[in-house]
Length: 158
Image (tube, rainbow, N blue to C red; front, side):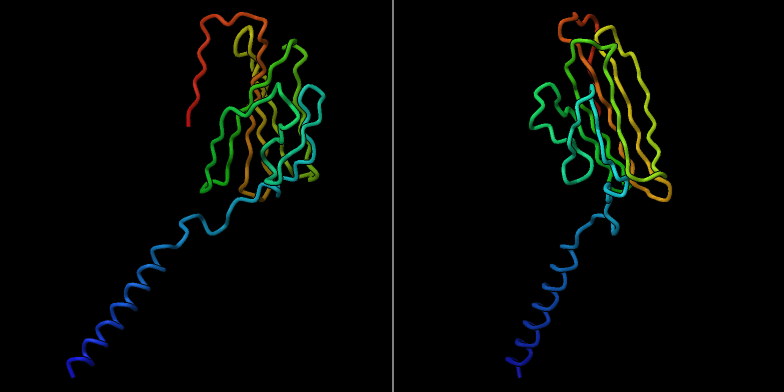
């Protein structure tokens, strides 16, 4: 009788431990993961150079572009938003340009050009789609390395 109680206790303990293990190992990510391909970005041009996108539909594939680097990424999965910062070296700030296109007509692409300093121009591109929670913000910071940078501080928040 005591062996039967001990076996029953071992089974109950094993069942409890397994239940606890599987309930605690659940992925805490939101039920509906962000799908940035819903924004349908088809074309990204920086200074008239076509830049391909990676398979996630967000990040630029910079393997062949030595003058462009990703400098920051803020991903907010609960809000389905992502913000990506890029630094682009250029010799002529005034001729800097960014163009982004989507295959969907209900996608909003808002572009702001900000003169940060005499040697930096920042293009902020916000992309959203009607009826979708996903959003992408690109901060394209154009630098002219030949101009001196006086009293300029770069602050990045993560």
